[in-house]
Amino acid sequence: MTSEQIGLTILVGAEAAHAFSAFMPSYFTITTFPRNQSDLDNLRSGYAPAFLFNGVLGVAAATLTKSIAPIIAVGLASLGMVWLYERAIKRANIPTGTPTTTGTGNGHYNPNLSSGLLTGVMGQSD
Image 1 (cartoon, rainbow, N blue to C red):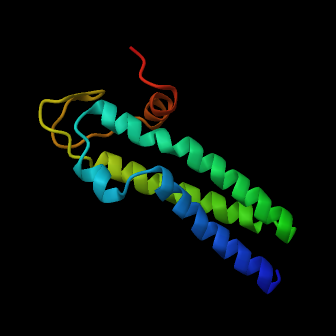
Image 2 (cartoon, rainbow, N blue to C red):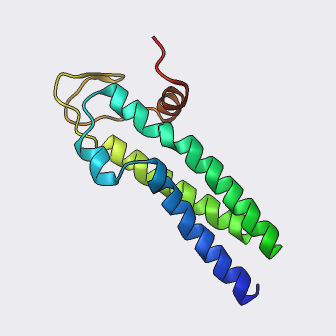
């Protein structure tokens, strides 16, 4: 790889993490402020636009550099951010007695990734 390819790969990898922060609240906000199940489900609504943005970013950089490395960097950064956000959601402090998909709130919540993602993107299903 040339120095330009390496440099652009590093930049798009870092930008992929920034894209998540543009569409999602901070780790602190997630662990501190959700009040109920709906809040937690809505947190995941930022995954879809972040993945879309990162996909376009990775393909554009790969086209410019004629290398697959930017796509790999964007993919790794995106997976790392999802891991971080899911960790924050698991540590979210839901008030005791609040109904969640796992029963009533006990100060912590461990949601299923796909259900929250679909609820956040497609809206609440009643």
